[in-house]
Amino acid sequence: LVCATRTQFPDAALATTVQAYPVLNKAKLRTELSLIYENHEFRACSGALSRFQFFMENNLQS
Image (cartoon, rainbow, N blue to C red):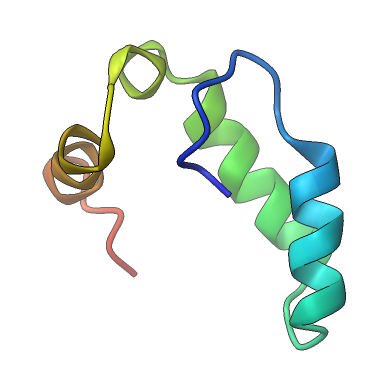
């Protein structure tokens, strides 16, 4: 979900993910991911490694 390079939240990807994994709480997941997508440091990341480092540096691993 968060690997796409976008400035807008990927609602279609969220819907597909929740459909594939119905145990997920869509509202909570959307809220949490929206906060990440709004972060300018996250949007500046390019590639999986820089995004992984962003998550680790911001204690977002769980």
